[in-house]
Amino acid sequence: MIRALALAVFSALLLGLCALVPSSAQATTTAPTSTHVVSKKHPKKKGHKNKRPRKAKKVKTVVWPIGPGQQGPTVKDIQSRLKLRDLYPAKITGFYNPATQQAVLAFQTNQGLPATGLTDRATYQKLTELTDAMAPGADPRCRTGRALCIDKRSRSLRWMIDGRVIKTVDVRFGASYSPTREGSFRVFKKSRNHVSSIFHTAMPFSMFFSGGQAVHYSSDFARKGYNGASHGCVNVRDYGALRSIFDQVRIGDKVIVYWSK
Image (cartoon, rainbow, N blue to C red; front, side, top):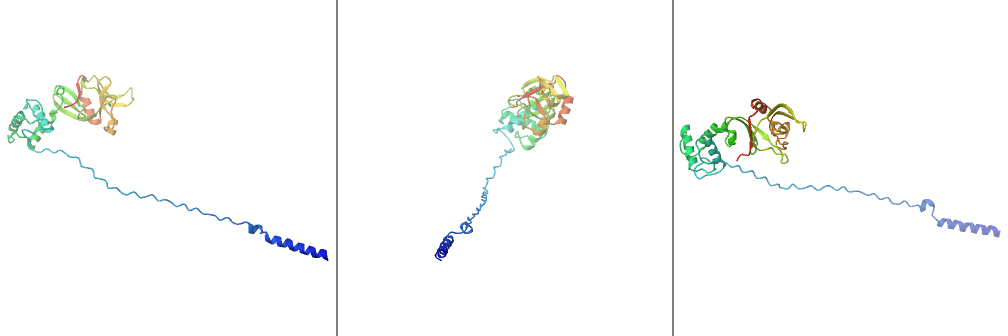
């Protein structure tokens, strides 16, 4: 009896202790999960700055008439053209001096224009009309015989016979490390379909005048313009015009490479 009572008490004590210990389901707590929200940063809109408008380049206009006391490139051009007409014997200075006035007066009288000695628009237009083919500003060495007159300043080649311009084309020269030589030369070789033995590039209508330097057509010049340079030759980009010049030029014709003043 006493043993049974003791067993009952002992069982009750064990049940009480188990009630104090949480079950595994209760003991395990679910850890809170945190969601990280990444906020996208929107790029700031750049404000449009008010750009200042570019200043237009000032174009120098000629005010007619031009007369005594005035000076500049237009006066120099007038003097050069009058000299071509054998009317201006003095030095080309760009200053409208008495000799210029007398030459203009003589030209106006010869052409039936109002004789004032002042160069008005009509006088200048007539003067340019009569002298354009005479290449004002060309090197004196170009004015006799047959010459390829090559001006580095204007980047032009004028094919001239006895002082008259037959054809004019744009040209390009050698770079600073391979400059086109300047001076008076002669055409010593012509090659219609020449190919460079050094660079293996086509050089149609080549007219050699100094060592390996020649006047020839350049497809690179035709494509890129002046954004490039030759290896010393005189490049021409007008295929048809150079073909015409090539057909006319003879071995021994002059080649004058110079800087105009």
